[in-house]
Length: 115
Length: 113
Image (tube, rainbow over all chains, first blue to last red; front, side):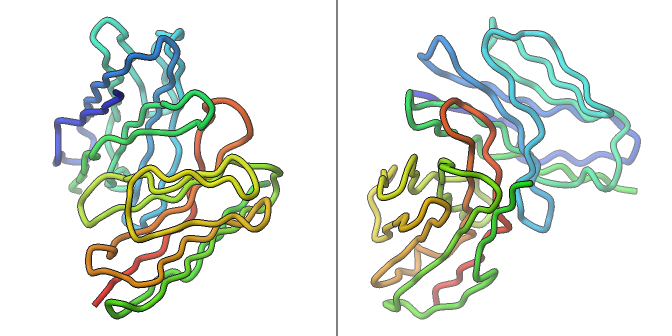
């Protein structure tokens, strides 16, 4: 069965520090997709990235970067030069269900960036 | 562009009362629709999903039900609320076939007293 583990419950950093969020997943599917979402204090989840299991290239989008390593079943997320606006709960998610297109979410990591 | 609406934004209901939460999506056709619940300080639990009108699947047994009376409308209901039903309810949609990203609504915060 699929499982997503975000071992870090909370991370607190000072502004401009880098922060890396770990995500480890388990699946029996040969093709799968991984996602990251951000949930700011307002509550609405914001989609950040989608990555398929065949694409192991790292990706960078502004201050955000993602490191996908299939060999270790990890899809880690780094925020460079963190800002107070980055304070949120971040969720990693894994696809499952052949025709249902469902996502299994990790428990989330709360990131607090202090000024 | 696509938009997803949920209402009400907040709700306080006594134990044993009925529930009806509504979600509508604009700007897309035949979306996949999902209901999630997020308990305080916890992750997201998928409750129901629908890949078409009248097609509802449940992920976990509970006293909640869902319906999809129209292509872009998804309703979460209960005949009698329990204290354990308190939480943050999120509706989401994704495009047709394939594992595309899900887009979430603003959520409904339900407190059962």
